[in-house]
Amino acid sequence: MKQNVAILLYDDAEVLDFAGPFEVFSVTSQINDYQLFDVFTVAQMMDPITAINGLSVNPTYDFVHCPPVHILIIPGGDGSKQAILNQSLLSWVHEVHAGTAWTMSVCSGSRILGTLGILDGQPYCTHHEVYEAMHELTPFGLPQPDKRVVQAGSVFTSGGISAGIDLSFHMVEMLHGKEIASKTAKYMEYDWKG
Image 1 (cartoon, rainbow, N blue to C red):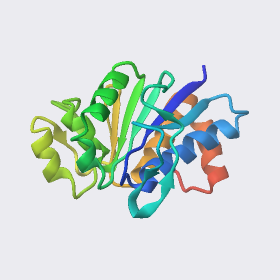
Image 2 (cartoon, helix red, strand yellow):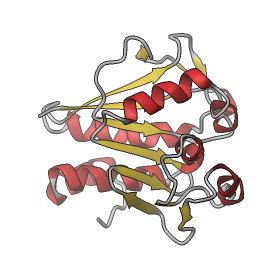
Image 3 (cartoon, helix red, strand yellow):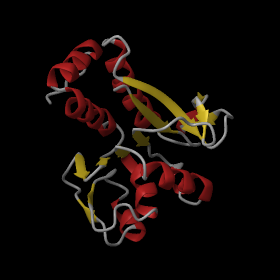
Image 4 (cartoon, rainbow, N blue to C red):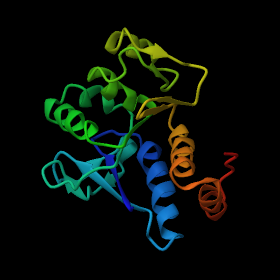
């Protein structure tokens, strides 16, 4: 079954946090006759998002019109500090996460999961500069600073910025096998060991 991959966007999100996973999932689908994933971005409103360092991005959907989500990707970045104060964003993530097969955070996107209590009592990883803040947001979470990717049930967290690419390859392999993931890595000329 083709799976919907929704990538959350908000102002000052880290570009590679969302662009890296977008590339991995969308290229995987592209080179497999567009049969595996439908990848799209979603934001609170349809207005352009200004990511970190000024990149303007147009979301595909707003929260109201977003299709069902099988895989939710939550990027980090400086904007995550404001995102955790946005009750509409938090409510949307909480509601969507309840129905996803998988929820992934990249880098400091873990702040959003921590604020929602999703990481309470669970192992997680994040950007190396965010662990102190995470301790305040989820004092009962179990930080794994030596890990690049951590799974806790249906939730995956990943370390800083580029780790989202590795997590995305891990997800592709888990869902569709090593051969498909390796084919994508070769096409992207990405040094993925699996």
